Image (cartoon, rainbow over the protein chains, first blue to last red):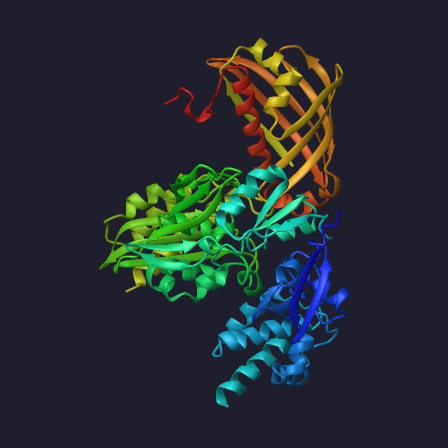
Amino acid sequence: MSLKKKISMTVNGEAVSAEIDPRRHLVDFLREDLFLKGPHLGCEQGACGACTVKVNGQIIRGCLFLAVQADGSIVETIEGATKSGALEDLQNAFMRHNAMQCGFCSSGMLLAAAELIEKQPHATRAQVREWISGNYCRCTGYHSIVNAIVDVLSARANA
Amino acid sequence: MKAAQFDYVKPKTLSEALDLLVETGDDARLMAGGQTLLATLNMRLSEPSILIDITGITELKGISVQGESLRIGALVTHTEIEDSDLVAKHAPLLKLAVPHIAHRAIRNLGTWGGSLAYGDPAAEWPACSITLQATMIIRGPSGERRIGAEEFFIDLYTTSLEPDEILVATEIPIASKDQISYFNELARRHGDYAVAGIAAVAKKSGDVLRDCVFTFFSVGATPVVATKAQALIDGQELNDQLIKEAVEIARSEIEAIADLTNSAEAKQHLIGVLLERCLKDMLAQK
Amino acid sequence: MELNGEQLIAAPIPDVWRGLNDIDVLAKSIPGCEEISRVSPEEIHAKVMFKIGPVRARFSGKLLLSDVIPEQACSMAFEGSGGAAGFAKGRSRVELKLVDGGTLVSYTTEASIGGKLGQIGGRLISASAKKIADDFFQKFAKELGGEVIPLQSAPED
């Protein structure tokens, strides 16, 4: 007797249907079934933030969210956010400030930063640091990432 | 670390969910935000045969004012509490506590009811619910019942909830005009489990605090209320000497228990630190 | 991890000793006990479902008794496997003493918990173990028709 469930959702603007095991995480579904390798797997406990994706407009941990739960939802990964241009200034700032080395954390970091900029457009440096403390980076030491985000916040505030 | 195989069902109504619970018994796990449950399943520290996803049940959602009470549905997410004007106005303590809960991505899914139902000693909401004298509203096969927050939390990870019951909502008396709040949590890194924390309210007029509630969390198996320290402060003019005495009393009346990384002595000490910061802050508040 | 404690049970020593050696009493006292059997006078096998917070881990284990002084004391070595969740191993010494009010059961335990349960569940492992021990003695005392007398309220004030 199969436990598979039929699901359908929008991923990066495209309609997607599948039949999957309930235990399959959203991030595994995106990576393995849809070949969207942008989100990564780090801890599978919700601590590292590498698996961060957007569901119905908010960031969530792809490892703490089942693909079946995304039935009927709008899902966005870094691939979609890049294509739409929504992250252009953030991504440019990341490059300018050297906020990316191996790139493993970057997908999650950018999506988390984007939600901060949306929800707290006047965030201070301390608030930026607190907000991204849910995304681990092993390479950069974080300062360049914070600088990039602060840069975008002030650019948008002055725009 | 992938979860073991399980079936999945998403009931549309509360009665459907309750029937499913009875039918499936011990083999099922209820899922709300899933931020604790799914991490547990990922590590195979639990292998249920079926997950009952209750996030579709509208009866469990929403924040509203009903008479003199603020009603918060069990499925309200931490982010919804953070963004709610009603909470900011009628239960400002919760707004102070919310940024301490994990991180944004977790807060977007994790729920008020989920945190209360687990009764993790390091969690913020159980302590806040006690400080705010919340009433828990519970539904089971035999109908609805209500229980005060302090009675609800019985022991380590143990609440009054029976296996066939679901927490539906809480009702909190809306804050009076002279109510002030203080919340603080000490952790090694932001978002980590608390080493020690305090959730406090009081009614302030001049330098006098009345009806104070000082609830400490992550120092015992359940949140602990410092009743003796409260009695000392109540109705007295707050000054440095009184604060010092209150700190000493709080440290002696609460018997802290150690966890893996912090000794009982450390927690005992931090209880005093937190109370001091709380009282000084409350003294300075308008 | 160390777990040391004392429980005062309002029942005479022979009853308490008999209960501690009775498989049926143990089956009803051990929280989450699903199966228990005595394989030999010294060896007991059991399957126990541990429920603490979000964790539900089924442990299969065995208990080996030694250094038995009837109606006074005994040692136990135990080990259990919780499958993917982890494993536990340890030793315990239990002593019975007649006191005012009933039987004082003192126990000292040293245990190591490995695997995921140890790493992740470890944060509150001492508190969890204490709770399980407390639950055990509550049920155990009830089975004997007695009760656990809280030691703090012992006649001293």
